[in-house]
Image 1 (cartoon, helix red, strand yellow):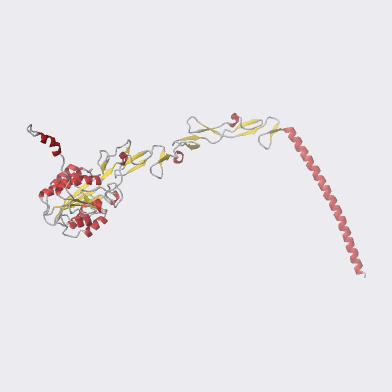
Image 2 (cartoon, rainbow, N blue to C red; image 1 turned 90 degrees about the vertical axis):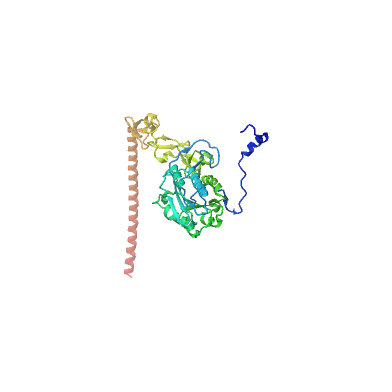
Length: 442
């Protein structure tokens, strides 16, 4: 700073370094459109299809600090098949076209470029359409940006519908480097224009959206707002952008970074996972549990894992689940747990003294036993107690004698009844004969 600078200027110097205030809103800005871009809830492209398949990810451990979508370690771009469709008609002056290329390069800078990440193609159009390079042509940022810098304007006409049709038919094909439906990689197109299309864009844009292409429309200066709405995907306030001049179009690059950003919700610490939060590169996350636990139906909380049900416990007999996510082994009755806490050995009931045998317990060696009696005794029907053999014989003899006497008494009684019955039958026969004789002699 010159030494002769007046003191007042020294005081005002910091104010002169401040950025100028934002320009007043353009009368062309309409309700429902976003000036300088927008980021929808979650910042998710590819709204019409499922999220891309998540590659292997690493659990997040630690507490993140909320810092917005662009915070360090919080935002990472997701894989896309991205096609820029840029207007290079006569109304776009050379310096302005350079601004468009800078805008494209700045968006490329915010993306993870590579065969497994985002692939980029550029479609240049005016009254004719030229595919500058395909999705599979460049696999790193530097070569991509050099290719963008080499693009030159086509100069005449504004055939936006033809440009979208060409992108759909030629740029978004598997042969040109687009990934197939099974990959679930979103297909995204960003069309930049400053005028009114000279062909019909409504139907072709509808077909492109129906094919799974998500369309963002960026209008500059004299761009026709109704045409932008016809081209863009729903919701319009997330897919239609407007800037007043090409001089400020670069500001939209940060808005697209937010739009294509995968928020690290694990770092934001808003995930709600009880144990482990795992970031997916699709911008989402999932919860996992510590070893010995299993994820509950709410996909957030964890419960102790049933190791016994999994069949990996190693217990020989019985597996018992513990509440802490672990388990222990037990044995059937008659067995005891060995020192390895897994296998079981037969328990000697006779040695334990709990057998109940009156005389002798005989260990069978297979977790069972039987009772026996001393010499001169015999085992009773309860298989436990014993009786002397002579006493048993006496009891049997007495029982046998009683049984014989009872049988003889019964036989005598039957014979007595039979004799009396025979006498009565004889009396009846005699009376019948006498009655019959009397009737004959009358």
